[in-house]
Length: 486
Image (cartoon, rainbow, N blue to C red; front, side, top):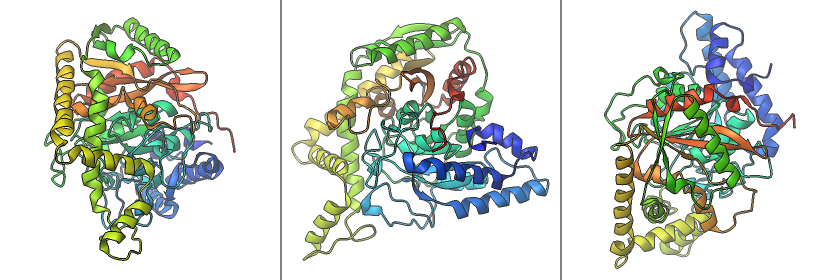
């Protein structure tokens, strides 16, 4: 039985009914990883021994007749910028190649409370800076739907692991689309919660006012279960929202009658692959047939979102990454004096994209340029958020493409600016701190297309319901990447 193809909720039922054991499930996932990892390269670090121990503990609980949590015994992967006590957390960077955190991130503690099984740390763009996982300091990850193509990024390892059956679920982080875009490219469901809904304590910071941890799963039900496990207030995170999280599985209702959906006209203009636009339009027609009300809305400051993001995020990154200097932890190079050691440690440890963003951010924050660049970007961010506030007075959710194209080939977008344009539909949501979910809505030449549903702050339940209803009317989420047995 190919257990690695099943969803979290299906496997939970099988465990409860004792049709399978947690150890058997873990071994199925590891066998799959053995078969496909040479072609996909999802993982930086695997934790098989720990996973089998966790699985055996769940089997013992079931054997004693104890109730188990929805994620108990279910194998999943963590993006390698989420701290794990005693297990390497590298951020896919040579500067942290051997860093072992002395503590767990809050989300890891919450998953442990559910007895989830952790299979390892997934590859990503270095320090989450990139949209293809080609910027990993170690190796690129490949898309399970076409191994010549990227899985997206920066959470590409997480998305590829789920799509290839190397994990049943995964956690990623989303600063400008880094959960939703790879989920779209790999045919997964990717959910970015409202900023502050999930604790960032233990997430290695890229851009602190934008970063958010969220799940990548096979279907919407699994995303609701994962969000239930990790959402909630955390006193250790000063940006955590002190509002009790609801039970998101209550939003799994197959009904969109009367739901008001807005289509931002700025998201359907030039730059989008025609076949992707047609696939999204077909999905919109289906939602209308299901009883949803659709109207065009305008987000007039959308054109400023990308330049604002690429000033704000690098500015925050330049500050957050200043700590990696070869002194406290991480890679240290030999130098003639301390300044020489700083320079060599950072030069050797950071890759080209990280250096590019550090320099851009440092420039934007420098004396004489702060007002002209960084302050202007913050003002533009406010305008972007106000656009969303206005749109949400007319509609319940917004619907857009997740990415302008299907997954591109590895090495195809060598120009950084061309790569940045892949985030055009996801970045504004991070700037405004809103929740967004990407779900598969069709295929173009055998490659998955993602549809993004955006909600008001803390309206995860609304977007989950809309996504679930669409999913139930289609079979896109049931299709498995055609890897075959490698």
